[in-house]
Every structure is written in structure tokens, then in C-alpha cells.
Length: 145
Image (tube, rainbow, N blue to C red; front, side, top):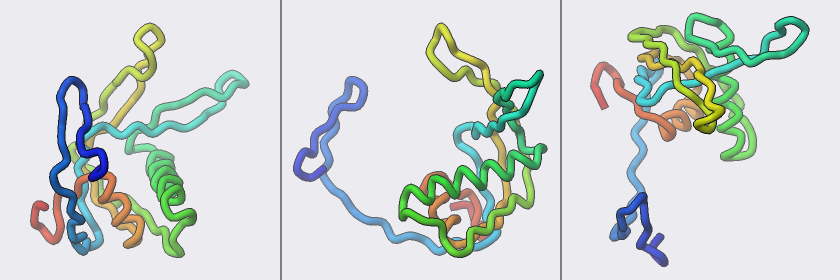
């Protein structure tokens, strides 16, 4: 970015003038997260002898399992392997709001089930740090951060 500091985003031109590495805060378990964009989780189920995609919401146990699996798979892409301890457990969900959002091109868009929510999770330190880098933590020891 310093070699080519100018870039376009939509019709605007931006210039990078400074890059700095921010100190990572130590996070405590359990943590409370609030989704800023809806989470889409799906699974495959057999229906009339065929496998079909099925949208999942937080009340389904498979939702939790697939969310953990997705986080673990994304983590593996980063360092190449899972941490020794990959504990992940959602212990509370509140403010759940289901959303139907069309996925796909305009003429072939399919409405799919998404979830907006606030949830408390207990997770291994490495997965927690990774998840926080991908999202926004809202409370730590009762403080909004």
C-alpha cells in the first residue's frame, strides 16, 4: 500500500498516508458479540431422496455446530492448522431477529434465512482472537468496547 498508496473505491479516490499496527486487546471468556451483518448458516437434508440445502437458525443445534465448523475452517486457511484447543460453545442468544435476504444474481436470486443476534460465546483463546479480528466484540467484563 505504501508503494501504491492511491486506490479507488466506487467512484472515490483514496490515498493511504499512514499504516500502523494496533495493539491487540486481551479478551476474556465468555464474550458477548453482536452481529453487524446477518449470519447465514445452512446444512444439507434429505428430502424425497435428494439432498437439499436447508437454512438454519440459532434454535437448531446444527446452527451452533456449523457456525463452529465454519470458524474452524476459516481459521485453518490462515495458519494452516487448527489450534490444539478449539473449544466453541454458544451459551446464550438474545435479540434474535430472522432475516430473509436474496442470494444470487438478480434474475436467479433465492431468498435465504439469515440471523441477526447478540450472543454469548465461550471459545478457545486462539479462535476468539481470530473471530474478533473478523467481527466486533461489544462487551468485555461489562464494558462496551
